[in-house]
Length: 226
Image 1: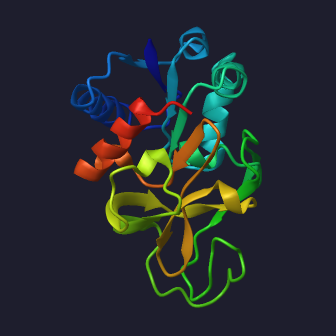
Image 2: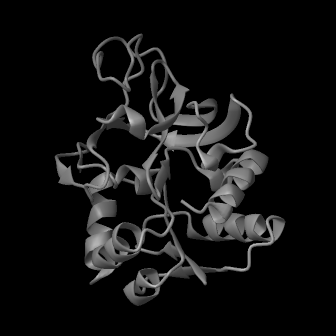
Image 3: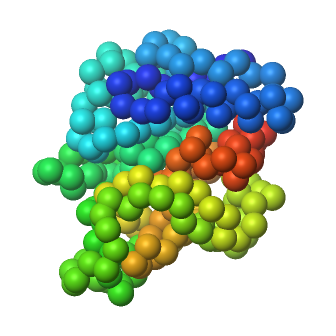
């Protein structure tokens, strides 16, 4: 069985692969961790990880440039229901659209849109306040406490409320369905740190750069049987 890390030219592939390999050893996972740009490998994978670094539109174009890759992702994640993890922009791509340097169509797996991060006194997750004097720097870069929602999703099993994870982003996922929020973070306003439904999960933070907490989360993903 294979855990496919999708190589579409937009991601910390080496860091993600190394972190998943360490998590696999710690959890006695027998699945092979493979970085691949081959849609056939992704279509048959037991789990899929979609990393993402950079602009939403460029990442979406990168996926589209790999003939058959979007269809392979749909085959594995939507039709066969295998566990799927999106990281940073990989999570954001599950949205209906991204509004970074124009409007770009997402995969449409989770209702919502990706919007500029504007730290204010408002609640960004609900979209009530998007204007005002920013009190914190954008992009959001560094360590922040993450608060899993109750009941705790299996992805966050064994992780204390307020565990530190590493973020690097200037846009956030404004989800439309409250039940899709798995965890939140407060950075001048509270917004989604993790979203998901059924076999789909995504993190705005980078678990592969989040040391012990990140390795625990990746180990949970490798053990997860939705």
